[in-house]
Image (cartoon, rainbow, N blue to C red; front, side, top):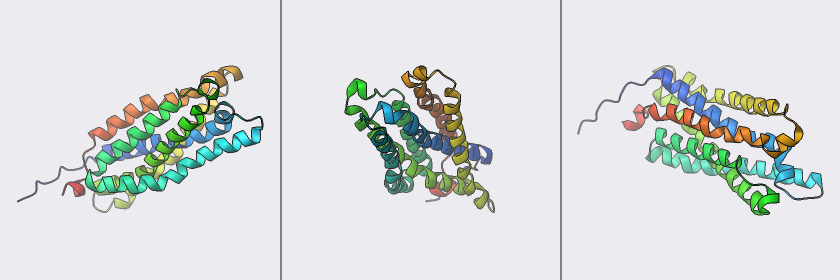
Amino acid sequence: EVLAAPKPPRPRMVRTAVVVGTALEHYDFFLYGTAAALVFNTQYFASENPLIASLAAFATFAVGFAARPIGAVLFGQLGDTLGRRQTLILTLVLIGVSTGLIGVLPNYASIGVWAPIALVLLRLLQGISFGGEWAGAVTLATEHAPKGEEGHYGSLPQLGSPIGNLVGSGAFLALGLMPTEVFDSWGWRIPFLAAFPLLLIALWMRVIVEESPKFEQ
């Protein structure tokens, strides 16, 4: 049986989809760190000792890093069976939805101990998704690369890290102009809720990118 010739890659769209997708993943993943220092320690962990509350908040931040190897193994396997493109769509949706849900998560004063439990679970999902994103994005980019440009394409996911971090930090910097009571009440939720519309943009870019020609072969 003769295999159909793979469609020629669209280099510009592939490059854009990889950078935008990894930027969103980094935005979502590291947004949590800023919130852990400013919000989560007071709103999700009940303790009369501010130090203990802060340590608990940063411990949940670390959960995301501990979960990354799990995501790497899980989505690495899926990438070899379902395809690079389909797997990267899954990682993008997973982290976008879990980040957005943090923006609507009730605090400890509203639902008690379920608040930190739910926060940890959402952070765990962030970490699993992020673990599968990096290698998948590099693989998709390099397998779409024209001959001789594999290194250039493979380096593009690295751009997502500073872009995502700058956008996330800039969002909280801008929100710092709010009155303290407004920020503590609902203002801090805005960057997390922004994950939903940003997800739609990044998802559209990844949906229209074709599957890796090498995977199709």
